[in-house]
Length: 319
Length: 263
Image 1 (cartoon, rainbow over the protein chains, first blue to last red):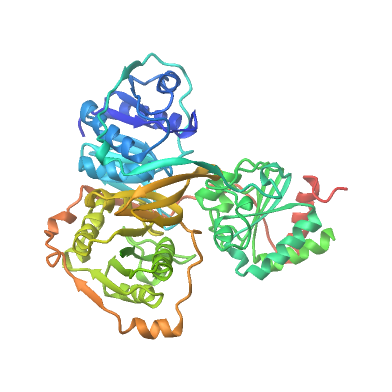
Image 2 (image 1 turned 30 degrees about the vertical axis):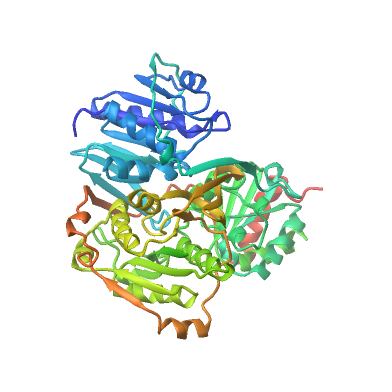
């Protein structure tokens, strides 16, 4: 791989840069060091001057600001990112593996005819770029070598610490000519979901339930436990997808972030999207039949057993 | 109106499995229709059921003969006909990059000229999450990724995109378009016995890359799988062992110490 530059594209929503933007700077700086190149950052749309100032962190050579629209629109992002890549000529294009990242990264990769590797959890450089990523729902970790320049990589949030120190980057406005005819989507607005009777974000004790509950009727047992413990019932995504509990009970990346004193996870495997919503709990307790379930990696206490055996015993003790 | 739905048969690994070199032996794998694609199939079939005009729903998969079982499931749920793409070049490829899969699917889509393409957000096995949007780009269609609500209105699709943190984006996309479908958008039906019987009589067209006018070189990628391992457990959890009575007693102590159950 040549002594290539890295171009990282920041993400913002409703006036705020999202945390992954600053994590990308750390990942990008480490990678640029390995490659012997510079770190370029781009911010597209919104308050680009304010965002540009905040993205000016140590190790960033240049911040490219693209004044184009207020919010994320993938037609604009794909056009601007492809144009910037043509101008900066980076060896690696780093984008967030977020919902919006996945909404334009594959288009950019296709447009630039680069390979695309998504959801990187580690990046190193050997003969080419070596990307570590997970398969089979985090049960398998793989490394993928990419012998191409440039490469488009999306980076998982929460894997790199955010860049914090202020830097002395050059702020460079970049004009992009977005072809109106190529604009096929229009963002009409945003809506908060999950308002309801209970705010699990405020709960002190949470009993949370996942796929391991098997049947909707079995939720009664969990509700009985929550009543007994004076706790709040929450759930992982599949339970909400099934319509067994409302959306306002969903914990995770696309649901609520919770910070209770105790988070009791019943039959939850601990997918990375779920963990993102509950890792801030003071004490995490997991009950799961699979000893290799990722939930045990972040739990403080664990029981490898059937929740249908353990929960009735627990109810009896607190009743 | 024609709706094309892309489906993939994915491998699920058993709780206990081994890795041999860069593969997981077959005995540890079970195959099933990708969960996200199941929701996409349901969304496609509902469009056909709810519209007054004639809607044809076609499923397409890139997969070996074994995957016909999976695609028959889509046919049993109401898909009208199916296309499966496979040949020696695909069978021999170690790692087909999502942009290459998109290119193959695009060749099918170009022949079918659908108004709408529905695809799962990601596949449960490799989890790239890139095929649908790359497909849209190859076709020069509009697109929306991570869609959890969909309404068709004339030449437009009104969708909700599920962003992080309980926020949904309301977006309109001009047709033709590719939408990548998130789980939870609907409640996928089970295939009825009647549906399963009918599926046996529906067309399942098998095509090679050559049939689609594609050179096997479209599969030549620049990515090589170089390592595969079970992630090292970072667990420092205190595990309670014993009978349910014993583990529940230990758990009670932890909960009471944390203030649970205090009046």
